[in-house]
Image (cartoon, rainbow, N blue to C red; front, side):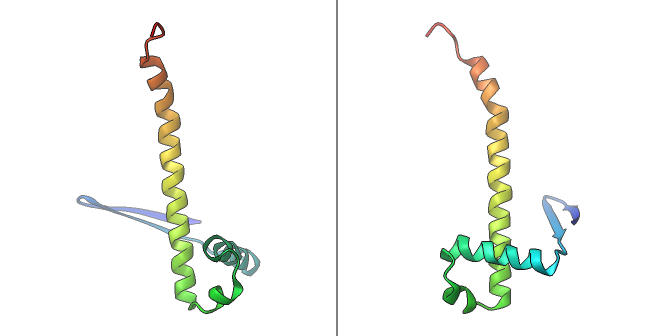
Length: 88
């Protein structure tokens, strides 16, 4: 997966280019369908390809943000534990 990271003043643009095989791409869309519509084929098929890709984009963003937040919590926990007095 190719990625770029561009800083322009206070703004950052992160771009990923992912070129999966047809089978992998279909699996990604199938998983997005299950995540958003509990696998409802009818609702998913009613969407345009761009709408489907927008959903995948949102799911990827949520995953990245949730992973970063979890990692921050994992890193902060030992510091918090160390700062709590043991003789409460």
